[in-house]
Length: 84
Image (tube, rainbow, N blue to C red; front, top):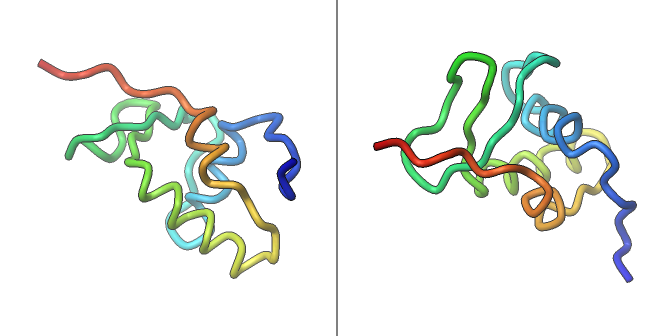
């Protein structure tokens, strides 16, 4: 059993952890994972790599004291479609 609470809104949580140490991610943005170099804002989508989520979770814990299970959050986020 995990020491972390279940993630009920992965998009909200992803926006929160990514905003901890950087520019706030707008509430209407969708966070998508990518394994390429195509990170950043694309319309109303923010593409990040899993390492950015891991780092954001750690920064969030240091800033707020709230631990976020980065592996669980990563598994709950959608992957961006590949670009041709």
